[in-house]
Length: 232
Image 1 (cartoon, rainbow, N blue to C red):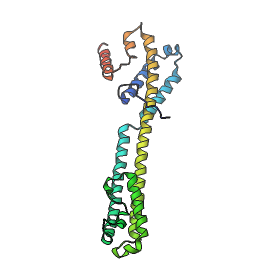
Image 2 (image 1 turned 30 degrees about the vertical axis):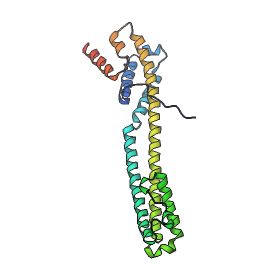
Image 3 (image 1 turned 60 degrees about the vertical axis):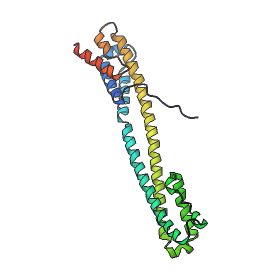
Image 4 (image 1 turned 180 degrees about the vertical axis):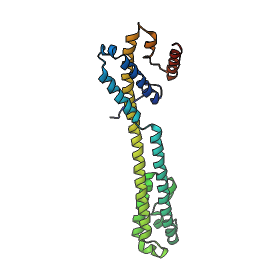
């Protein structure tokens, strides 16, 4: 069963979520006696702070995208090196057989530039296999085990580069999902804390009440914070 896609519960940047949590935790510590009356004690605040720290330390998406791009570039380079090695062999094969013959086409290198990663890897293996079957007939055009070993090494390097690149893609997907999960849990706990804080100050002090207010738009939150500071 396919896992359901997770959506972020907050509509402001993760960095702002982290900062909001730290601010509200500081307010709650100051109002800890009142929070204790709701069963929200210091240990729960410390647990929330720990979640904040873990959230802060998660790699951000631009870091993961950058790493993914680096491995993709390495994969492209490895692919070109493999194609170059194969073309070098096929130049020699063409000297022996016309490129319209079955012996030439048996190598299956037509439209190599359009091949997928998987097709290119299979092509590399096939070229080595077919060339080895005919190596005695191709010896006079310089085909030998050294040339085949070059293709084999290039194919192994390309396969490794493909696997690493796919690992980075998977790691990014997992990391993004983990960040959303932790961010949502953090936001849920933040809402609980703020609801308690608002209830404490609802009929006692509008300025203190405002300190526990969360806004749909982070820009609105910043405006309200500035207005509250100016009113002091």
